[in-house]
Length: 571
Image (tube, rainbow, N blue to C red; front, side, top):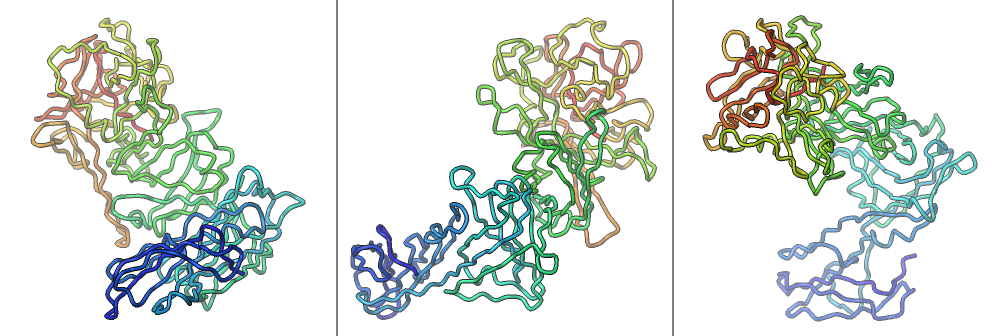
């Protein structure tokens, strides 16, 4: 039974004799609470002779037509079998009212009661219940939140039941023919029960429904929820449909060796992968769409328990965590995005060649404290990549490392990123790609990150970014400009596929013209960019990629003490 409570308010919308909107007013309960009838007081609406009346007063009113739109708010249930939260999500209305002294409000929303039993104790302390239905307009979901302190719900061997309530709008949640109906419980682990309704289900307003789920295999069985990885890209949620998605991590006893934990085909903008991630909370994982893009991320406890991960937009580049920070300067990656540019390990061209994924930004060092070694490293975001191109006078001193300052040029083989010695003997004279001692990408980022290799022939990893025949046809390069100002080199690679149902995907990778430094002095900041490989040239020199507004060469050589940029790769 619905009864009025102290403080309840109505929205009254007025119309004139011709049905034109005249305004609205808020009326507040003035009679005693606890009754199904109540008196309300509020201001008159001038020229109004007919009214629409709505509860709650938070409805959105169209001031042209006077029609109201009701949006469900967050629903929080305090423990099992508690209905107190429903009052905030019940929609009542009366339309065409001519006598404000005698109004009967009809309930337009409905209520779903969930009677759940035999819930697996692995769910543990319940955080949310999610009701999902497959409608004619796609999947629709409602979430019910439970407290994590106070009157909590914890499933155990002696407690495997739950009674829960959700208010809903019938039209929004009606199930199409052969549509799915599911309930997901998220706690320490996520479990779900699902069924297909052959004839569909049309819900009516002002009714109470009951969904009983007993975990029986013949009806709706409780199952561990697969990991759902949602793609988020600028071109739409179906961008990767038909492609395979893989998720993996690295071996504990071989930190650079990758392992694949599971895979699935992407459909409707998401992949459902059967995998247990409980052992990877707080650890680095990767999510890959082979020969398209690879994402690197530290798995959170919420992602592991909910079994849901949302990918960033690959075209937006790498992202940073909101914390920790140093003087409000963010320095730790939340996501590292790496793109496939048609380049394989060691320049391989065979069908089974190992693809390379190029970080979308350079390696950046950020001062985090007062000591010389108080430094953190991350992959630059899109904004940071653009800001790396900054106008300086030639030979600007590079030494300034005040708290929170950033730099992006490092000596060859200096895994600390702090050396400024001009003595080549202070830097290794050997190939270092993948070295756990000298490769700054491997040491600072961990996992399978490393410097790309290089050489004079076409069979090296930097070769495809050169001008001329050495580059072949992949990827396509051009000057990266902003308002006719040269910022660096921009490369694009289009992923084509024989399957016409798949969308065409284009990857764009930029190498900003960051110059280089000699010891403490920065040189040619705006005109050139130099990028270390992990391969020595000979006679104390090292191969690097050089870019300018008129050339790009992968077989440039640089002195080992030079400070140059680093664009890491991962296999």
